[in-house]
Length: 339
Image (cartoon, rainbow, N blue to C red; front, side, top):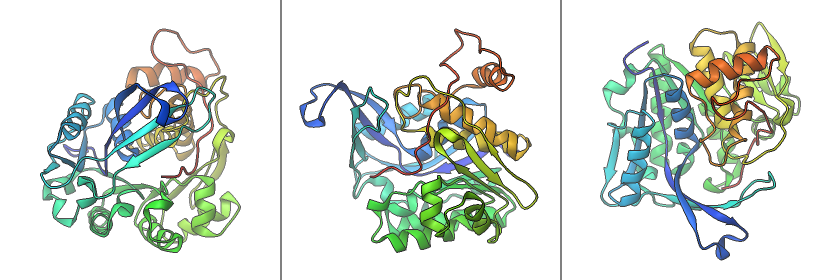
């Protein structure tokens, strides 16, 4: 692959996670972390040994410095993250949910630095990346970020690079549901691999059955579709093959946020390593399920050693060795979450 194995882009926010259960208004202590579906995937791929470049904008503020410092510690190349002196870094508050339910998240991102991403943010050297991962979040942030998403995906595909796309629907960021459906499907048609959740696929295509949802995108030139089915695993389809891959059983769900990002990490990494789609979905299910066993959006994403040992033990039907990392267990993958 090229010097940049993977290019990803989007918004990384500062995240303040409640240290106590209860309403956010009543919580007195928070722990500072980062959040963002796009950067979660970038971090996961970096942990597996890929050279990942991150394209974004942050404010000229302490939260922006915190975001960049955290991403760089995860091995991401942040030389293409612009510092915006006029607009702030976005942030969010996240409740603590110890019962496995979806946590409450409040966002403060309107007018953020990342929403001012534009075509001018695309540097020529970024187009040398071997693979581009995109989601439906940046195009929801603003018209300029949407234009950049289309331009970047189009140029990478025309250059012969592989492109993956996760719809990651954020309905509240769009002017209307119909605009969201139209724009997301236009983007999906530019990708080689599309990764919707089941409820996302139903909304975007109007079809109920996973096979029909996948066929909708294959008819537009997509090469492979993997549909997340929560605790039931995932369904995949290509022009030559299709199948269901079972999920991994779970004892306790700690935090559901980030499970779909873990799925993307598994699928993309395996396909870039020339594994079959079926194997890639199996790895995707495992990493996605592992993510829900850790508190935080990306804390449960494995490094290469953890994946090599634990995932191989899991698919062989053996207990995973202890002391290497988080437990290799699985859980539901939420197809959409409100914003």
